[in-house]
Length: 368
Image (cartoon, rainbow, N blue to C red; front, side):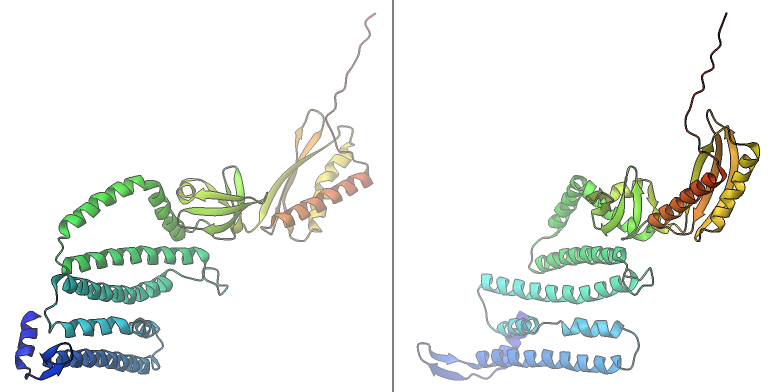
């Protein structure tokens, strides 16, 4: 750059001018610097506008949205960035103080690195939306789990790009970055050990997204806790319990625990048992099975699996009933079971069959 500046200065004719407070001065380098600054600024602006116009013309003829991303990325190029670059090139005609030159160089490098990172992030966000944000349920809305995963990928990419950008700027300023990178590596290991709980939760959130054991809105049971999933974050998952409080569970714990997901249920199964008294006539005991079968024939959304007289209990003749309700909703299940209980009570009352309850019969014997 210095040799180029020297060649430009040597090619300029000498233009002397007398200025107040300055005296006689060769203004040719200053006029050349202004011309370079204005010329480069106009050139950069013209090239950017021409490229965008051409891309918009091509975009109108294609169905893909990749060209729209390119247009959006180039449209985000800030005018002050290429204006600063033009100013930096123009000032190379002059010998600036070392500190000023280093500060200006650092500012230009930082601006260029920042702009490059912003352009790269446009493509990262597009890739995250394209491959991660999906409508899993077909309801026209992006799955919140996928949106969280896309956000995490964008965040990690932003951190990595800024790390490379800082190293690029420092390296071009003549600062030795090898020891810095080594120090960052050692520091990164130490931080990883210190934050291993946080990092395990972070990677667990990716695992939850990839495996999809549950989604937002699902009713799940974890050990003795149960509730509806409200949010799946980077570190924790928030669950609203039936009592109304918010349960916060770490993602790492969720990937190692047994999780029951009731949202994926297609139907509910119930196994109930009831008993009738030993005094019930033999013929009426035989009728119980048919009574239960006829009751379920009249209940829509419920189907009987089996009913049997199974056991002679201590104080009752015991029957086992197993039935299914064709709905995952717990309230619907309770409605069907309640209806069966009421109708069974009505039928038994009609036939004079009594439900049993724990009793003891004491026999006494008189000894003469």
